[in-house]
Image 1 (cartoon, rainbow, N blue to C red):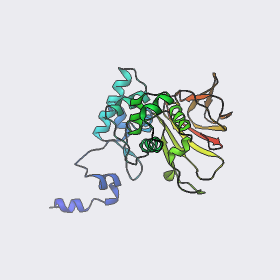
Image 2 (cartoon, helix red, strand yellow; image 1 turned 180 degrees about the vertical axis):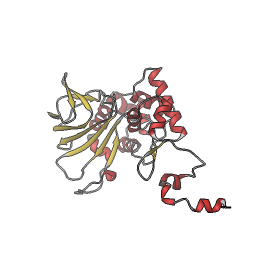
Image 3 (cartoon, one colour; image 1 turned 90 degrees about the vertical axis):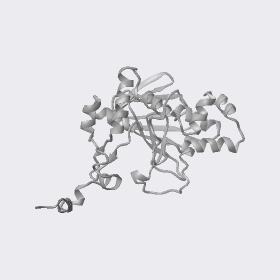
Image 4 (tube, rainbow, N blue to C red; image 1 turned 120 degrees about the vertical axis):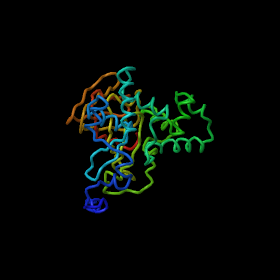
Length: 288
């Protein structure tokens, strides 16, 4: 007779992914792959990946990089589907509502929440009250307070207003204290969450004459209101589509398109598609 212990010893450890072996035992929690979750929730896998880019879910990863979803992830995605289908909310609005209700947890790496303490620091250094800053910038006191406490995120347009008020630029919100480095690995990029569904990844920093970013823009997410600043900008669409308006004139960009304009022209933009948009976005000089 083969004992239960001997059977267990014959299971190769390398067949159990890092997530299962390090995070928890298989009988403690069961995980689902994205195809299974899509069927349970009633949406497409691409929609789930788009919601993930907004921070709506944060699946674990197996050794082979497969997404692994928990029962809690499924419940959260079902809630999002309900809000989209019944309430008619778009993805950024869903995320904002779930964040407000405390359903979505802050990211463990702190990337999205780093801007709050930085804004509070800038205000404290100038001995300014919340009302004074909020009224000047044109937002509510409650919204500014929520941003500083990392409970809500501000759009690119609002961040630009705050940066102009503090006589700095959005680059300062990344806190790029390191000196120039030639090579930046993807995992070493500095990240800023600029409103629901907009992720800015800084590709180089230090004493540079260019400010290169990778913008990852979720479906229906965008910059918010128009903004302007000094300099010039170059865009190259790596993935998806983008609509950008300059002084009332609208342009539709698709994968492979490039775009160049003067930053002083008031502009705003949005991802009108159903999948995440990736944009190589370069400002010069670093005044964004």
